[in-house]
Each structure stands twice: as structure tokens, then as C-alpha cells.
Length: 309
Image 1 (tube, rainbow, N blue to C red):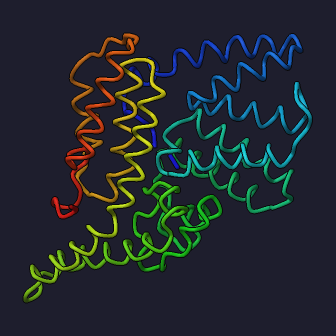
Image 2: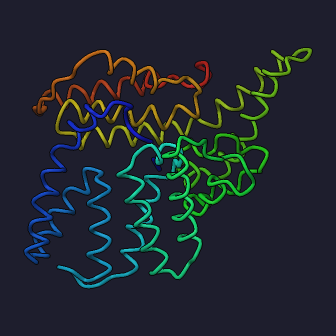
């Protein structure tokens, strides 16, 4: 799965500074044809979630630069890029991500001979042109980009068409790991909003029953996202990394919880400056322990009106 982390780029630039430095060195090695060393550096930058480095790794494995050619591995890397940029609305806001995604789609077209990848790349390009002309992209037509993007999240296509409103905002990993739960969740989610809009007789009681079902459905999905957050914490090196881990969790959990926590965090971050510093082992352990306590007390993204036990 993946959205633009913050509306302002300041914090994002701080987060990616280290990986950008590695990429610069890797590119110099690549230009000097030191492919083995460049491959190692791009691999290191890719662990920092650098899409550019992932794209370069795909090309290295595709062309056999510094490593034996492995087209299947290249395909997996390109698909990983698509998974991380699967939120098309947010993708279109980020010029760098959209270019990388288009390139990955073009490489997949060549490697798999699947023309739908190329069609999707062309559609993203068309939507970018619409935005450049300040036209409103058409996301809700039958031939919308959301429908085409099911090629990136195939399990999302299991959701009934009438339940797909806003489906592009969800993380692909949820559909891949919890396909049946997500199908039912999307159906109950639609019913939830329909009841809110109609407010028929006894709607509050019906709404409570639906919400309780939703709470039970999303519990394992939230734990899955929380485990991802914990792993992100463990791989963090600075306080900015930790902040991004929190924000990434909130972005992925927001569509399940409807609480706009990521937006609230973004607003709070925009109001204050954040100085980056490298965490020592004691600070890092304290932060991880605090995260585990929050999860155990169910405070880390309180789900669905606190119905989840």
C-alpha cells in the first residue's frame, strides 16, 4: 500500500535526507559502472522506503547489473512500487512518485507483455495533464482510474461495486491479508453511512448493531497495522523516523476508523517545527515500550467508538 505523508514537504525532506545522500553516491557509482557497489547502496536506500532506489533495483535485476539477471525478481520489485503508490488520488499530487510509478508500469508492460499496465500508465499521464490544466479528474465514471487500479490491488476487486465508494483510500495490504473481512467491512461501512443519511425509525439501534459488527471485523486488521508500526519503530534511527511511523499508521488506520487522526496529526505538525536528532538506544527502547503499552491498552488509534476489546 500508499499516500503523500504531509502536505508540507519540510518534514518529508528531513525524513528522506539520509536516503537521498545514499542515492547520490549510488548514482555516481552507477555512472562509473561500479554496479556491485551501486547495487549495495541502492539496496540500503530502498530499506528507507525510497521509491527511486526500488526502481533502480528493479532495473539492476532486469538488466543484470552487478547481479545475475532475474526478471521475476524485477517484476516483484516493480509491483512493490505499485503497491506503495496504490492511492491514485494521492499519487497524482506527487510528481516524483507518479513518474516512478509510470516507469514501473512501463517496465512491467515489457516484462509481462500485459498491455493493461501500459493502459494504466497512459491513464495516469492523462489525469496528470487534467490536473495541470486545473481540470477535475474523473474518478467516478465506470471507466475510472480506481477500477483500473484493481490490477494493483486484485483482492480489492472482490468488493461488490456498490460498496466501493472510497476504496482507493485503503491500504492494499488489508485486502491481500484480510480479503473476506474487507469485503464484509466495505458492505457494513456502506450500510453505516446509509443509515446515518436516512435516519429512519430505530436507526440508532440499527447503527449500533452494525458498528459492533464492524468493531469485531477490524480488530485483527488494526493489530496487523500496529505490528507494522512496531517494526517501523524498531527500524527507526531518528525522532523524525518515529513520527513518520506514527503518521503512516494513522494514514492506514483512518479509513477503518473514520477518525481523521492522520489529518489532525498533520495539522499539529504544521504548527510546530521539529528538530531532528538521532535516537540513542535508551530513547529508542523507551519509545518502543511506550508503543507496546499503548497497543496493549488499546490507545494507539482507538478503534470504532472503543468497541474493540
